[in-house]
Length: 501
Image (cartoon, rainbow, N blue to C red; front, side, top):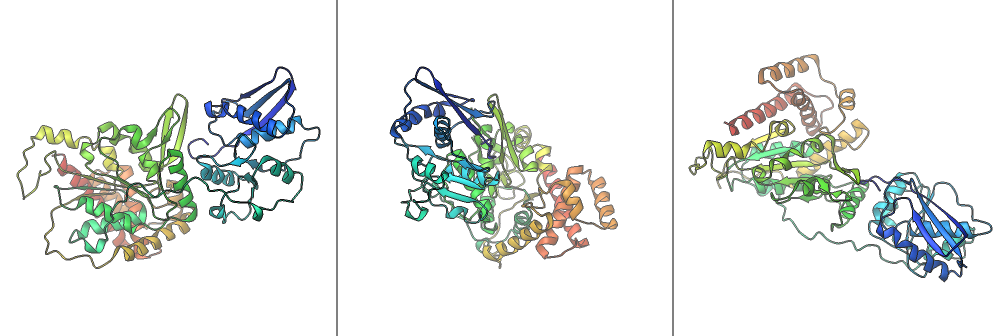
């Protein structure tokens, strides 16, 4: 696989009279080079005569680096085909995904579930795999997943012999499905006092996939609201659940097959590679681990500026691109960014409770890490204040808000014909599917000129107005929705300006 995207690898082999040897070519990594010993042992176990035989196995395309043990069964089958007097005819759109034991048993390997999932997406109609539980792929009705215990059984099946049926197999466990190593205690919205404006912003952000920055003194409720935000996101669909699980498998991170979206909260000491992804052979970072869920960056002002700036491209495209000498990979990163920061290092600039001890230079250096391009990509900038214990609690529970968000997301899927939210729908598609009246467009343009908003910010107003209409269940965007979207964007611009004074 390249990133999370699967790629078809064709395996071919030749066998000729020469000094006994097995060579694998086509940019294999160390784990594949070790496969030759497994293949030779399997050939001996299958009573194949390989004395004075040179075996050459080619993995095509030759200019793409391959890694892992998933090619074992395909390579052994290619060798057996090359040695057979009458090779077995393999149907088109057939692939073989399995590692091997030394005796020729088909067995599992790391990231097997993502590999099978990508093979299905690539259009294979018949997939040979080890005898594992396949209920995860029950929705792939037009794909035949054939579970075989060993190579003799696989060859027999290819020859049309059906003496061994799948229901006779003793299933072996796949990779252990682990629970998350860290349980985040999420909070119901109904127990949070006050913050009516922030709760409205978070509801809209969840419904349309928008991003939020909260600024305020320590203890005002930023982290509490961020943890509550996760509870109003809708459950993942089956395909989304497999997609998220696949990312965690690639990153070698523990995650259960859960319908709940992921919640990631990396420490502010995290490096650029940890956030976006990296490594010699690129692996997903925190942005991709938060795919279809929440990336919560607490204490944003303490993150290095270079790390904050790496958020720019993924926030708009929904993908994190990792470039290395060995290759370039693209990982999904469709997230809700929830960021929180204090207005200054001491945390009390503009507060009425305590006096700020930070100088202007120190405070501006602290806030300059949150650059204009990042703010331009954020839909809500909220100036938070401490709330009194006498403030009323929210009447709506997280479950009720989640139902509202789910209905809004369903409208967006139906509108765009794909798994898009208003925030990341391609511009051309958004313009085709969403209509605004001439008066509404003139109103938005006038305000944008007055507030000196960028073209990106103007488009975000249109996207946010559509989200507001979706939350209300309206088919068309009303003037009231446009006015609310304008208020949010103007307040975001003013809040950022106040922080930078």
